[in-house]
Image (cartoon, rainbow, N blue to C red):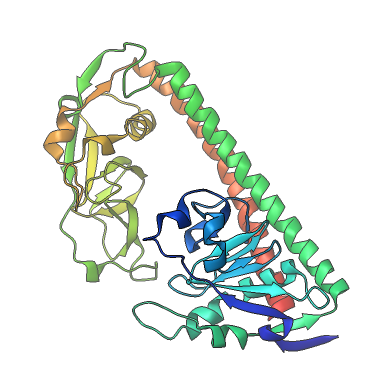
Length: 366
């Protein structure tokens, strides 16, 4: 059996709602999970055990509450994020839920089928400003339907791939944690200078200079033959442009927006906008050490402005930075190079697994 069937034939579809926020009793205790799109991962199926917000038992009769194994799909805003309830949960109006008819379909098969339909749903969304898939459109989605036995065989493959990807990502997290721990072991906490190392004002040992004013229309979201130079803005790579304005290795501090103070590392040919501050040492520094130290200093704490947070270069110039011996910096940087090699190998393995998953999605769901 390998048919195409409407989603509405596989279970009960419910659109969520939000109990009145003006009635404090609806939220006075954390009795029931309250699922919002932010609780659902953007790139994989989320098994929802905890949520950012909860509702009380008092609100249960006013909310849309479903049991475990219900499948959630975001249908307003970011379309097509998919989650599965692991316990009793309520959910808001941006989410459609389908309670599977267990005699016909498993939750896992529904979830992977919806993931495979994500691009289709995004193209189908009928609003330019806020994309929306309404309940009727959602119910009319057609998916390939196979026997329960075949569903389990298919989803076992996807779950194995997802578990391998999760393990690899955990390995990367562990490497990053070990590097950070080694940094603290060698240099202490750079915010409070817990090892009492000599310090200097950043402006006395580094030249800080903002990039060039760049029109948004000159920045392309995706790289192509013409626009292939990475463009750094206030929060890392913003897109791609035609020409490079800098070449080499630089620590770059974002100076505009809620994430101002974030630190990136640019290599080779690149472009930097007026919202990016390039760091050029005036004295010998190991650039890898300098980048990680600036990153760990939480420079965002020096921002000004509430509506539009920002970091002034003159403020950064006055911030004091640790000045350990260059040999110690070099020794730490060697550790970072080895860690980066390990992370790169793991990341390539993750990409291979993701390509396999995409191929299987196409094979099984079209």
